[in-house]
Image 1 (tube, rainbow, N blue to C red):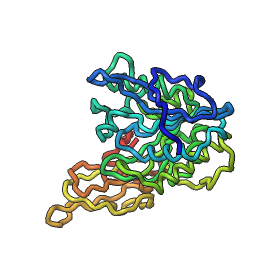
Image 2: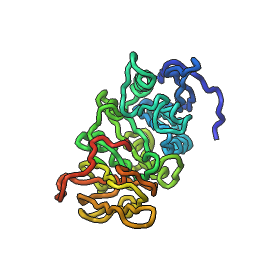
Image 3: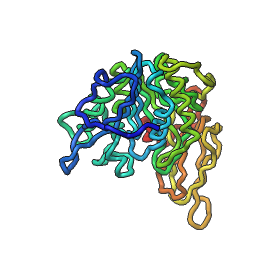
Image 4: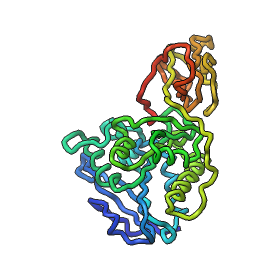
Length: 340
């Protein structure tokens, strides 16, 4: 294992100034907290011996979504800078205040993945977001943004990508996902900013928050290796390339209308039929208050796992094809999903 020495703090990231064939660990100063002390984002930069693309991998943009951290740590152990073409810029903790507070949002309770690229004359989170994209993400040629489900929910291993774009479609399939949600780039997301600025980017959703799930982490790691092989940054053949991933034209959450104690029935990645029972809400005496049914045929991308349920709770994240016949309008449909 490499020793942790000579970790530097810098105002700017200048990749060309870093020695080739080595792993560099440093902090980049983005903005200041209320003590006047700097918020510093940790970076691990693996600079190959030969020229090649710069691939950025960001994790914990939501501070309690941690599987990406372990994925990056394992990748560091796997990659030899002496055998790498190009550069890996790894950001294990993107939202430093959120991570320290063990919460999804930034310190001012704003979601950083709704406000990219921020602005210089805005709020605390605006300023942090602005410097995050200009000082770090703007240096990438490709971006893999690692996320998980939100608190109280679980996710399958799935990809969000614009698959009508050839480069992002290729990146999506290289990850060997169970499910691909054909999401165009919603304004305010890091993925949107990157793609708008010529940096092909996808979002990789890796399971659940506040935990390391090593089976899913290892699957994600294999997809990242595939990406590096495809870009000819490391040697080897792409492995286990998925050609039959379930592709969803859209996804949305189904909600409860009643409060009580909920039991969500399907498993992750299960396919459900239109009209199929997906959850039961009970009162505290065990009597059924509500039966929630799928209003379209689709696949279970994520689900609620907390039994205590207020009226209006998100119950099940359903991925569907727009060509599937539906029997009713979508209740509680939201175009912008919190699990991004």
